[in-house]
Length: 296
Image (cartoon, rainbow, N blue to C red):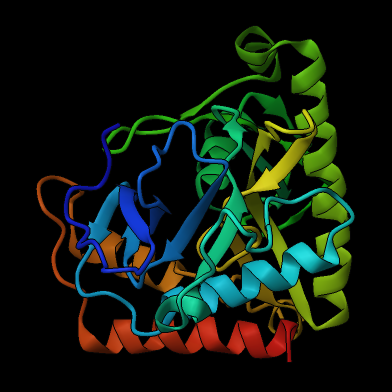
């Protein structure tokens, strides 16, 4: 399995490095294979990616923040998730990485990124200006950047291999890829989780503008299960509700700071430039503030 080649494997007692994505590294118990191991260790690095590139330098403490936020959200959501406890046959999480690692079930993952959008922003806003649609879904006329949509919309994407662009697809294409029953289940679960998360975030003065979920099928029970990271600053767009009410839209708690700097300083060809120290610190500070607002 191909992965992110720039990741440095850690020496994790009892575990062997099996795969690296742009941000997370996967480990399996020594002597087991990634394809068959019932449990795997997901370790969140401090790496940050944007526009399908891993950037330099990393964001200090980011892996711990993302892991803390994911585990908190998993505990708030009324759907099955992939977190598991150590057992007699599965090593525990070593203390050296305990704050940025999750022990999880090894699921049969669906090749779908389940994106839900509650507000018009990012690539959705760019498309809307051209066609009054987002991922092919028609929207009312007269919307502005950052407007709340009449209701959240589900806009799935096909998960491309590392180094390639994910592809926005229609719900009908999802049905072709994974079957109608599972396609409907992923859509309904995504909208359910988004509604629950949006309400919880709103209670804490935060707007959840959009996010993406990933699901897999539990190999032991057959149940569709929420997996990967969930509702983190990397996978979601969060805004400050008070600032939004004042008309200061998109005061974000995510990596939009990085995207904005790259858009202004890079033509998206070749290797992206190194992030300035000020951008790194601003991003880390916003990640920390979101944790404080949501988790306390």
